Length: 337
Image 1: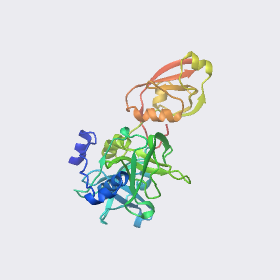
Image 2: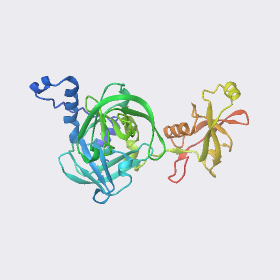
Image 3: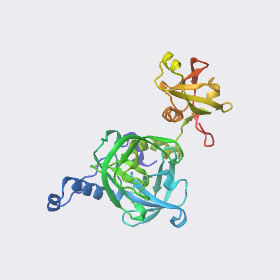
Image 4: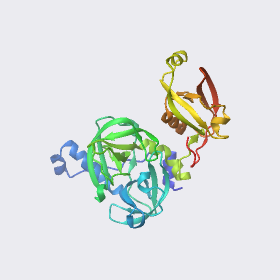
């Protein structure tokens, strides 16, 4: 692992913000505050934004990425690179280099690619938890193959939920009206100080001005695992379930917040759910102290809960409220939760 990455893990992803390049005084006076901010961000970040071409001779598709380390690590979308071994990275100065997929996570639609070298221009990863609706948002990428394209807008909403290409939900997604098009995927969404706050991932078609980015804090959470393991280790219980309503009398009797729960319809043999005493037709209404109203709730809570650490699972069984202790195992690639 590089010295930069060790510094990143040790210091929680902080990195000094590069100094503003600024415009000449005369030009700055001629620009309004909004334009000046966008120009400053574009000048600072464009050198760190790359174009990605995947597959032999780029026939597999293209997208964008953003360098976040001087030794060639960059963030992009999983749906841009997948697990393809043939990735070409085109830098801002036109240099084209081979890239290697270091890790990817279909659940969050994020991936890390590395190009060999050092002293690459790179962006600072910001704090998406500090975003506010209405603040400036700048997107940089290669829409439709037009490299280093800059678009600007605002943060339209926070806390959205978006289903990734793998079918799993990504929480706290950022909504912006900064224009995104095919090819922007994997590029950075940036705040007014030039800090990456999201990785652009999706556009609602045919609507205009409804675009989404995975928050950078989600990326910072999984980056250590992507770099160490090449994937994210998540817990699984070994059950198949469906959302069902909870009867009003049971909700009142047990002071349940939600109107529904998750009914177990199948249990994997010798999996954690079965070993923990869960039964088919149990209705899961709580996991690790949090309410469970649907299957997506259970997925989210399992993602956040450490593998191998016991968790209390609250179920309704034949009208009774029961609590069982289950120890989530690592999620196998071929098994669905």
